[in-house]
Amino acid sequence: MEVRVEVAGARLDKAVSELTELSRGLANEQIKEGKILVNGQVKKAKYTVKEGDVISYEVPQVEEVTYEAEDIPLEIVYQDADVAVVNKPQGMVVHPSAGHTSGTLVNALMYHIKDLSGINGELRPGIVHRIDKDTSGLLMVAKNDAAHVALADELKAQKSLRKYWAIVHGNLPNDRGVIEAPIGRSDKDRKKQAVTAKGKPALTRFHVLERFGDYSLVELQLETGRTHQIRVHMAYIGHPVAGDKSYGPRKTLKGHGQFLHAKTLGFTHPRTGEVMEFSVEVPEVFQATLEQLRQG
Image (cartoon, rainbow, N blue to C red; front, side, top):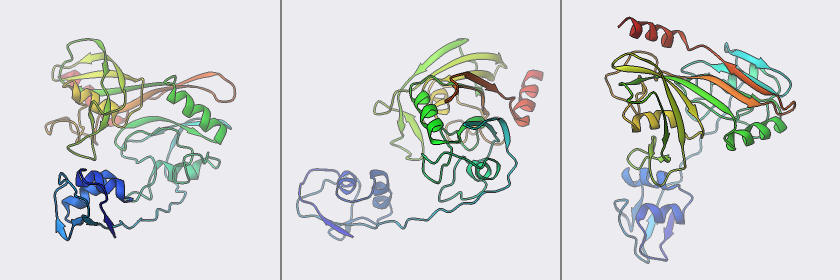
């Protein structure tokens, strides 16, 4: 595909994202791979486009994602006609994507719960919010569209209760505190999030429950729900979540990924108006690691 530059002055990656259907991130990837040419030549992303430049680029093939109900063990903590609360195991992806079309929470939900809301599109039935693949714990699921709207609105208004337990590196100087720092996509690595002035507001409250010298057990309460929020915020203050391959150090506790567990979930029932609260214990590997740390 080709486009001609009418107005000079923009960086190549910005020009591509404005003149074509490619996102800026995808434009950057194609520029690095030499797939985007200016007048037949490879240029860097910071190249300033000139009037009359001809930019050639590739439109990526869209991989069609199909998925089916699968009989995967799933702990349903609570269920009624409107909502369900599930305890997602560590290592399970929440919804299907190009790389993960089976074994996801959605595949399991479709098998165990027959009626799910369709608001988030057919690849995310019932999914009101999500937690990372290697984070375990509680998720709310909407069983009809009215419930979905009500639960999503409450999350957006920051009225839902979401408390996590994490084992983090180091010894925090304060027992309690608030981390308020905006989070957005990292400029250095587009697959990661970072604290950045260009990001969206993000607020995390922390409370140290136990100290083990090199590590601490912390309860964290989300006021906002940015992608990787707890992991980014804890790394930002110098106490990354143990086992976090993306935001933490290489030398860390052995496990199945980050030691982060969505322990408590509270919300207003969309039909009855009742305030509901659920808690689940940490997974076995988390509990066993705590016992080891307590023994020193």
